[in-house]
Image 1: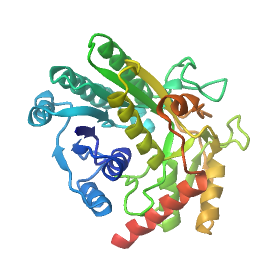
Image 2: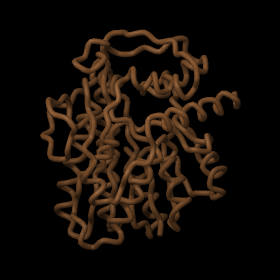
Image 3: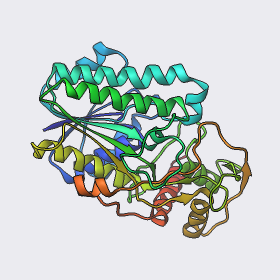
Image 4: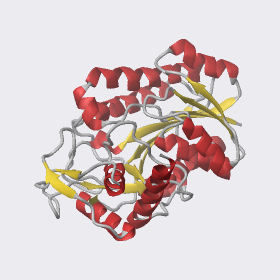
Length: 341
């Protein structure tokens, strides 16, 4: 059974490929244009799993190139669509880039899914669709507020596109996974997040400061209405996120009575502030971080964390790793990256 992974050389995509190769008999076809990743990722996957995969260097906003993948692999039974630009601040600065890339790539994937009658789709969504909220934790029935960034809006629109598309295609099903804040790295220390430029996410920012690549860590805002004034997020280990994608696709393939389109939160259900995350890293690494409290960053919400009951009920998914394990694996990966340079 062939599974198409878009954004396969990326952070979550690569960990999901590893999860598939280590725990299923599926064959993986990967697509990436390396705008935020590198072909080297596939060599890391091979080193960890001992298995080669078939991959394409393709920009999914090009329909004819996208269709080439489907034409050459007519026996694909499932698609996991990760490929998207994901930086909140960059999306504020370059909204048209995000609307063009994130929406056109999705539309082209769906056109091919319909044309080649591929029954199962997992869409990579985000907790950013909820915007700023008054009540926590977030359930799947929490009303969506105005998105705080163009990135978040592409995920809101993307879910709606998937929903409308699935309704008119009786043989197709989809799950949209709204995940919270993926962090950490593979337990081997051989694969993790590799920001191409200066990191936008907290944990690579922490580890790069600790290793000396960056002089200082900026905490964006210390005056939020939270326990310590810093933003609160639901950090979830990337390997837990990867496992959820595999379990979701397995459900669609095996359960003929599964709903046509489900929306499911992926989070630990625990809110962790930026300062708490920093202190967790300092504990597991046994070193002090050089950080300071700066101004708020455009597009950030104050606090968000998940109610993950639906993921447990529908997918049988329970996250395994806590914040200390997330930080420890990320630090091991950063140290291994530094040895290679």
